[in-house]
Length: 317
Image 1 (cartoon, helix red, strand yellow):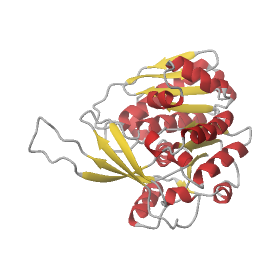
Image 2: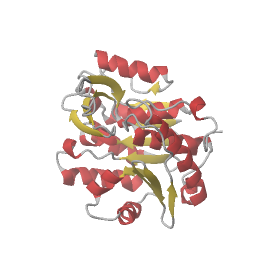
Image 3: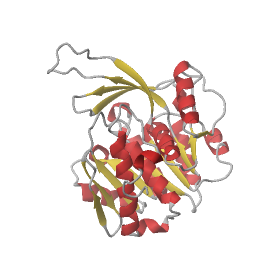
């Protein structure tokens, strides 16, 4: 079982204006289920692994959409009942290359309402892997709950954190970095983008920023960089894996798909925390994960592929 703890939200995706087609309508909003942990949980389930979402869902129409999306993919909803607040919203402005820019509506919303008692009760038995991160780290009480849950994870549980840093949503950078440091100290895998590293270690090179994270405790740092190769760092090795070329619609959810696919491959192949130091094992997992991430970019919004769509691709035979 892979448990994913954090936020679910609605991405309001705003289409860009196309200067080559003045008659095209721009600025239309499309509501799509999203949120980093929500996307990871769906990716895991679509790839055929048992998946559990540990987070709060509103009783409003958007909350019902999020709940039905999880259920349709076979994700276990671990926290019962409905949150009192409305569904959390992200407004996603796409440029003509499909690259998103985000703004958020977080205060008083459903995703924030996860408390530690609910989170811990959702895991009567600890899973094989636990994924935490994203906007949940900057809201309360969910932020404190994710930190506490991670600290409580037993040695046998592999922990991945994806900070998915959103500076516009971070009220206090020092407080955020302090919380993240505590979580990273227990994490086995940290998945970050180039933009995340620039926020966490301004001005540092990618290898230097990854080394800083490794010194904090993890065994592996995964670094995504848009269409450029994914880099995986251990204490003694750097693994580089090219990203397959695809017709990109947008990149929403691509990083979430990468992290979810890595965990899915790792647990499906019965790899352990100790195996994270084995470069060839890491390479195989990343090669499989980039296929999932690339296919996610070929469709609108965070819509990861199913296992059948990956037949014949590296790592998914």
